[in-house]
Length: 284
Ligand code: NAD
Image 1 (cartoon, helix red, strand yellow):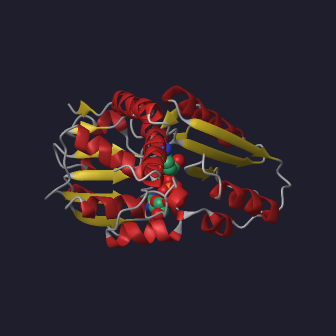
Image 2 (image 1 turned 90 degrees about the vertical axis):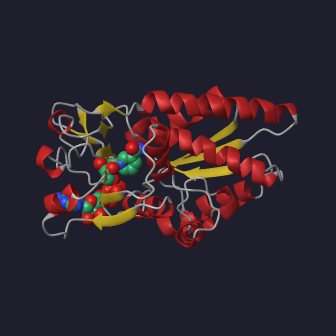
């Protein structure tokens, strides 16, 4: 049965690397800083924001958390972003999504300085990824690539099938796999014969949001299966987009949920903030 891709362990290793690098930078008087902005009281968002602040503290980053009331106007939010864009002690700005309905998400993302766009959602960051220029990469897709590389599953020359085409996961992870020299197929809700398409893959990335969609007979024996899905079942338990127990019988490698892709996202956010700080200070 499949080898488990331990996202928690890989994430801990990368965090240790980042922590050491931050300590060395602080010796030189440079401290990477992250600003996290939360509008409203969405419970899931509050947890994410707390975890991001905690990661900053653990790794030696400076951080600011701006908690704004749900009725904050778009103009006030944009004014805060403008201020953070100009703040020298802030290298990364993360606005926790989703935003309240009266605020236009696109206007807010567009307002973040590209140099501080640690979520990688700004259109210029997305365009840079598309054309292969250096840029801050979206965190979850970057985490998927790290998991593959750090388990010796380099995408180069492999056939990859990504299920899902969202702007935050499916599309960017497809572009990253392409950049790593995989042959990439993007499948989605209108793809006919999905099991057949997935059966061709050496690497499967599932980013769908449908619990246990991917079955054992969809998987080529020995394939690497990366499950981005985080779905909450009625029982309260989390589960991925892959039917883990049965797929693990045929796959070569598989990520569990939780403990696979999940722990990588905040770690890659920290990596992006470190990278942005180094760039801001002209450190290679
Ligand atoms: P989304 O809803 O924006 O996109 C889902 C995609 O799946 C769409 O492109 C759609 O075409 C495709 N799809 C839907 N039903 C399908 C079906 N039956 N067959 C094939 N394709 C189908 O979702 P998203 O934001 O990309 O997130 C996907 C999953 O990943 C969710 O479970 C989400 O919670 C999870 N997620 C996890 C992390 C993390 O690990 N940190 C980050 C982001 C998203």
